[in-house]
Image 1: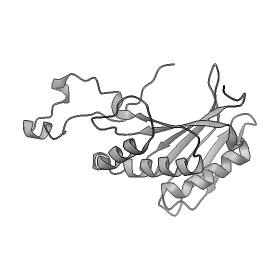
Image 2: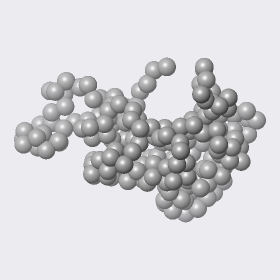
Image 3: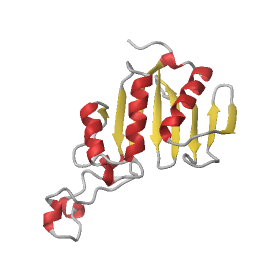
Length: 187
C-alpha cells in the first residue's frame, strides 16, 4: 500500500545536464517540483527549478564539477520543498540499453555492469547515468530505481533497417543501428 503522499522522481542525466521532476502518484499524475542543472563541469553551472503548488521558481549558480556532485543539491532541494521520505521510486532515462535492454527494468548490479560494458556506445551519457544511479542507490537504499531506455523506441525496427552498410562480421559483434533519443510512452 502506498502512502497518501507517495511520489516518484524522474531523472534525465544528459552529457552536461540533469533534468528532474517529482510526480505525485495518482490519477492523473501531477508534476510538482521540477527543474534542471545545466552546464555541469563548467564554472557557470546553474540549478533552476519550479515548485508548482506555490508557483515559485528560482535559479542559482552552483558548483557542479560532475553529475554526482549535483545529487546532494537535488536531495537538499527535495527535502526543503517536499520531504524526501515520500519518494517511493526513481526513474532514470538511459540513452542506450545495448542489445539486452529495451523494456523498463529495475536497476540492479547486473544491469549496471552491462551498462558499464557498453558505455562506449554512448560515452558522453552512460558513465554519468551509471554514476547517478549508483549515488541515488546510496542516498535512497530502499527506494527502487527503474531504467527506461531510449533505444527501446527503435527496438522493433525490421532487420534490414537495423543493418548498416558494413561487413556482416561487424553485425556478429553487435554493431548495428539502434536509434536514439526516442523515449516515447503513452498514458
